[in-house]
Length: 179
View 1 (cartoon, rainbow, N blue to C red):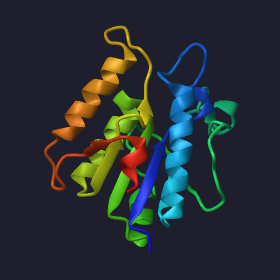
View 2: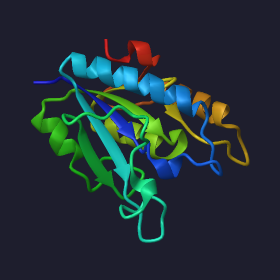
View 3: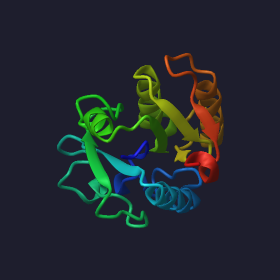
View 4: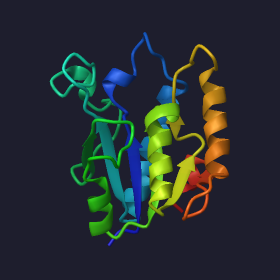
């Protein structure tokens, strides 16, 4: 049985557009592909979480924006979870899959740092999972009040000091996350 899972949140075509550029997006995909390969090599589980938007939303399953980025390395053994809120656990089968696979350690990555990644990290910590968040494993866009790099920096600091049953998140680089 696997003991760790890599959770890759919302790395979908509709989240990466010219109108909504993401910080360091191309290199992020390269790092996530390398991390996924490392997790798979240790018999870990790779889980892609996709946001399923309502009709008219770019992430609606009938639209191209719902698809995972074509530059992501996705294998037939990877698992896909579909969500309708920022929390990858809420009303999804994520926790059941983790329990059935005896997963005790989560590596959480993806898009967007300040929305779905943050909510998923907080939920995982509240549920008692050992949670690792690579500092270079998530992205967001500039916001009117703060640039993306500062949003990422802020969330990494918050997660590293978060009070939860499992302790704070472990913050490290993608290269160190699956060790």
